[in-house]
Image 1 (cartoon, rainbow, N blue to C red):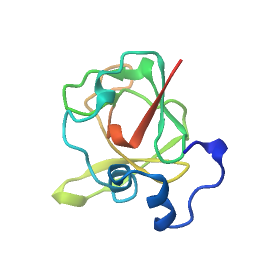
Image 2: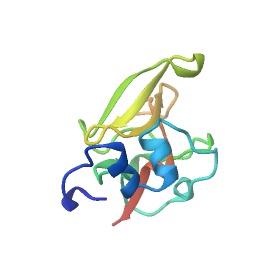
Image 3: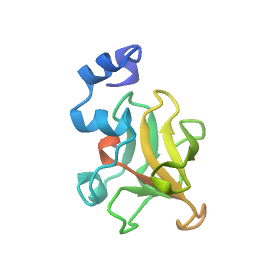
Image 4: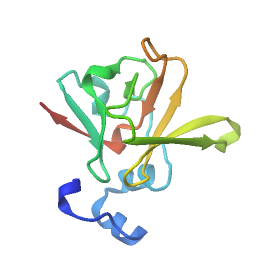
Length: 134
């Protein structure tokens, strides 16, 4: 779904209609895909990674790096305000969750062990993303 296609779904039933089962589990239920399962880990083309739920531009390919963690990783966001963070204390851990600012979809987590210049590692589920090549 892209932003140009209209309004965001109002309820879970509508989200289920537009998302695959895996996208729904990750974006709407804060799930996690298996490590190394996403084809987006290996993307080397120039372009923008967008939210699979609403099409918001989230990460630029110039900010992607190989973290060897098993998920697509970025050292910064595409544009300030397109993602939000919130405390996540699930699974007995203290982490910072990353969500799409437009649709609230769960994307992954951000950690303070990334490369310079930010020192951040946005560890993002590939199923929460689409890639638009330039």
